[in-house]
Length: 301
Image (cartoon, rainbow, N blue to C red; front, side, top):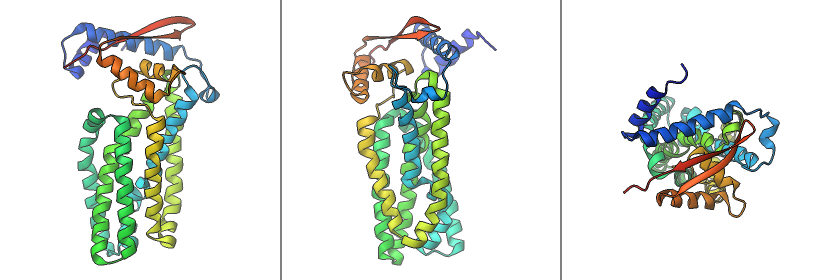
């Protein structure tokens, strides 16, 4: 199953919708270098937390934080406890709550068809911030409606929960699984994503344990907490999460290697350089030897 280069060329041409073999060949060369780097890596779990020239520790923390955000946004109770929420927060009957939960999951499936298009169209960083902002506003409205506690406000709260599910789906649901592997150094990607995924499921467990008690004891104020969490994500993402859309893994390394500016700002500069058709070179180490990985993007209309 190795060295199936021609098939690789055909697949990449189909994915990129191009017949330009030179562009595809350049990408295959990058893939080969990346694989060689991963195969020669002798990194341990403790190395994840060491400070190195590509800021591996910082990037592992970012990958873990973005997964943590998925839990703290309120997605876990919406996923697991919609029937409980509709009964205890909104006041629906059990039968109607079950029915609305089914409709919510069908809406979740329908809304998710836009996720991958939005990730590539809008970008990871901007989509995370927009999603967090919208989820925060929705949770605030849900809290306000449940505090009023009328039939009309209950219906509005249900509509907002459906809106929340869409905003979560379009932003964090798929985004964390794209952004994590992109932000991590190749040498640490498997271990880093393992740790990030463990973070996600650990806090999913925590949320599953505490949310029902929270709703039973403090009611609508639970949703205020989720609103605050979501709004707090925005400055964190803005300050510390560089945009990875359109950047190769090697160029993400380059964004973190520059100590003269933040990775966020450096990533913006790299995007500008790519748009202008400049050649970008990253010198890295493979098997004890220095290797230049060249990334060239031609400016398109």
